[in-house]
Image 1: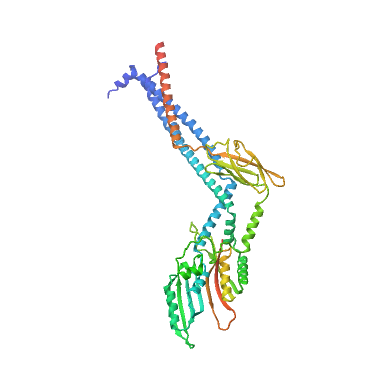
Image 2 (image 1 turned 90 degrees about the vertical axis):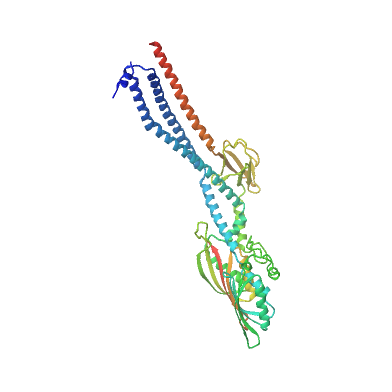
Length: 179
Length: 352
């Protein structure tokens, strides 16, 4: 059979072009995108692997620091436990030789100590306390609050000495924190 | 227009038309081979992606996610706690300061402390105007008194001087001080560092029943007799196992290239218990290894320890290498096909 070469050449070139445009190039593009996807997945795997390895390490280190964690839990409790705070304040006052005349929650608000993302997660709890007793007892009470496992901060103290009075009256504002 | 050249090319036989013809045929075959190669490569890559996706699922198990939540929670709490400690103020320091700075012939009747603004409002009496002016002078010269404001004094009926005075104290007065009275009396610079909440007396141990009880409970709950409390592989960097007490298993993710046939674990178990195979004895982790922990009372607990090797990441060099191999394969295919066609063509011409 005699093949007409020039026509076959033109026809074949046309077929090659069609094959290139409709099969090879799309497949090549798929190949490139798959290669990118694969390298991305590998990078993601490596990053995730490293991340969870760091998490495991941090968790293990946390387990080894139970003593410190217990202290942090006590200093900055997870729960907004008003009963516990009132109990601690009354107990410390009694042990210092003071009588709690008035105790009320004057403010409970989101802390102005903002977190990294700008949102405050901690709450500031402020109590106003009126106490009866002497100066030494007041000092003892403030020191006992400052020594307490929970973080207490005395933000305001106000008192005066009345003539002929056996016990003085003290007004305090005490701030503590919780989540 | 002269179409004779085209006509001639159809009628006449030129030697180069055969060459072009076979070249074009080779090109066609090469194109088809290219397509097939890409098809095969894509298939392989899809397989690899599937494997990678499956490998991705093995990292970040439920337990690891729980750990993640716990770690992030504590990270936030530690950060908040550190901020609170940094900004913590000791109001009791103000008392010590005032006691140290008050002269013998001066009495205070009213005391108002605003720790936030670090201001102290005082009302009192002094023996005479001289004592009062000396007292003001003591405050003014003290490095911990930033300013003396709202000053007024009146001579009372008993010849004593009544006064009101407002002080703004330095921030350092409310900071942590190791030895409070001495600090204020000798007026030495204050170290602001606050490592722990410790009041003036320097006793760092927190008082109260809470922490004692909590640590006691913690100890009781972890001391269960036959537990693996930690499982490490002594590699560089060290690999820490993820313990799952629900199914008593330990999973360790090791980087690619680590020889799992001989890995030395460091095992921490409950006090009084023993473990077999022993800690720090090399083991072959190609398949899960069972460790048996025996409690003091003789009861045992088996732990299945599995080591997962991370797949080797494809480097840029490897990636370019695979591209080069593809190109070489294509070129070799084209040449081989061209040679085959040339050979067939010569054979046919020879027969004629």
